[in-house]
Image (cartoon, rainbow, N blue to C red; front, side):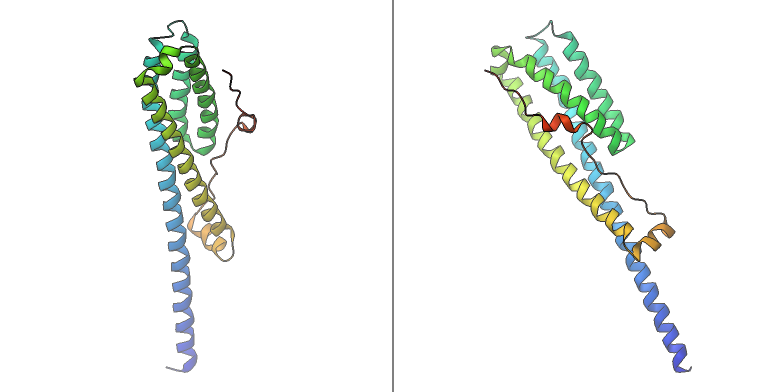
Length: 188
């Protein structure tokens, strides 16, 4: 075989290796993003499972706060269904849920016996722990989305990403920025 034949074979092999490397890199990032989203939904489910117990604790002390309990229950349902729809829907439901949860804790502030109740304190601690885990999961997810989107948009990856059907993902962002920019009001 002439030398130019070997050169063509070598170039083809190198191109195949590059394409396989690009494809595998995109697959790894896609799987990492999917895993991170799964972590978020697991933590959202954990928090949603804690909420009925928290409501029952508060109900015993604040029976006349029915509207607050209903809002928390509705927000809990909304966040569980929104998590299945994707980051944008989950972020919107998340901000509604956080507002409802703040209302519930505000009600609890009016009942000193409740604030001293061991079960309530344990649930409050578990929810705080879960919130921290949700924040960490969001950061991990958004980092994975950043890496995937960057790889999909850079050359020559963008050519192969479009050929293989890889799509950019949405970041999990706060739906209502005013909520997080406003400092919480604490009164004693």
